[in-house]
Length: 242
Image (tube, rainbow, N blue to C red; front, side, top):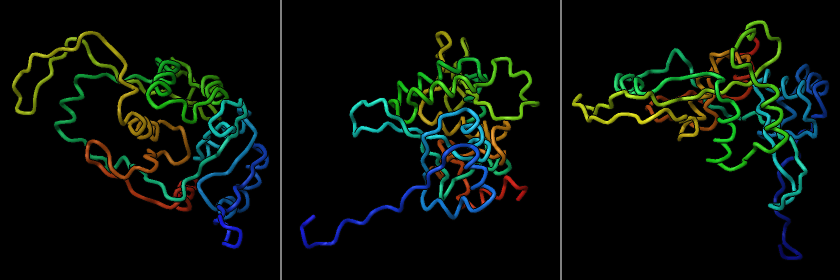
């Protein structure tokens, strides 16, 4: 900017959260008032802190410092959307066409957690899945057997895998047989829209307080269903039985 011109506007400073104890104090007071935007920041990558963030519906996003240069310096960016698009299970409509197409697939939970993690990185790049987050997600993943989750006092991460069924006939919309069959069984968890599907499924899985699927910033899905846009104050109130 020119010497005598006004400086460019600066974003409000992000809230710093030291650890899970500081988070507990903020939750007991005015966390929503202290966060002017979607993000806070922290240098704490301890499992109890990440667990509490997830329990409160705050996403543990990670970034690397260095301006595009690999520095190995990572910062946690707890994200609590100012506006959130939420899928309410009672309003979710599944069309007959979608039900028919679903016969070609099968859904599993936590049967290929690390593979799903690597597929996400392969398709989208490292994004926020930097090494510290990969280690935490893997360490906090639910067991493949899913045993004991109903008694677990802290959140566990789960993966949802969508597999093509072998030897399932694919029919076109008018019902005539195309004669196409799957050739083997490959995970399609890295396919387009997989994140939204995982969010809607995990909403009813007990991963957070609200028990509702979170479609984040998207208000429309591939199947034509739409989510409700709510403020984070309203979303936070659901955890208190609102």
